[in-house]
Amino acid sequence: MKMILFSVWRNMREVDYPDLRSELSNTEFQFKQFGKTCKTIIIALHGWTGDEHSLIPVSIGVRLPNSLWVFPRAPFKAQNSPKGFSWYQEIPPSKKEILLSFQIIDNIVDYFKEQLNRKIKIFLLGFSQGAALSAGAGLYLKSKVNGIISIAGFIRKDYINLLKIKSSQNFSPILILHGNNDKIVPMEKGVELKNLCEELGQRVEFHTYDEKHKIPLTAMKIIRNFIQK
Image (tube, rainbow, N blue to C red; front, side, top):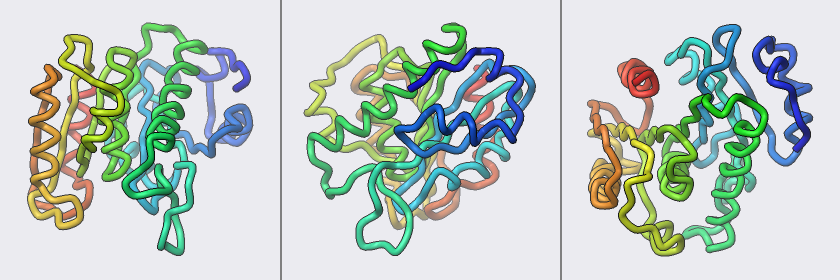
């Protein structure tokens, strides 16, 4: 990844994004910025069959002042689907794929920490499969990120076993949002994630809503408030 001066980020206009994507050549990206300065970065991870455009509406709904939203595309074509991408090629994912997905996120975080003021806040946000990745990567990165937002997500036990994650005081807080009527990732999976994070000593904020496998408008304010704490 090539270097970009902070002044470029601070004064970025939407027309600048294609040039910026060429700087981050390992992964396809979309970007959305709110405000003329960048105080918070949200790395938003789409779900299975999604792409780098999928979560842009969430950034518009949250509309966090002085924030830059980064939308990476997952590295694999979604299996058994005519379109979209997946963070894993195998289900369940192999050890190699788990580490690859974590490394992608870690590289993005390191990149921004190198380019920008280290006091800038970085959050991971994910939906469905992307939520599982954000939760797992958040445990992996510990305090390198300021918080994690898991929407309709779950946690894979193989993440915990693979990384030998144990109770720690260095985990970032996590916001868990889940629909009571979710049939794709049942509510029980969200509760399992909540319980596991609490057992590991992670600070958890947990909210439910009367929706299916989606992100309702009511979640936008909750997300914004969590980031602004």
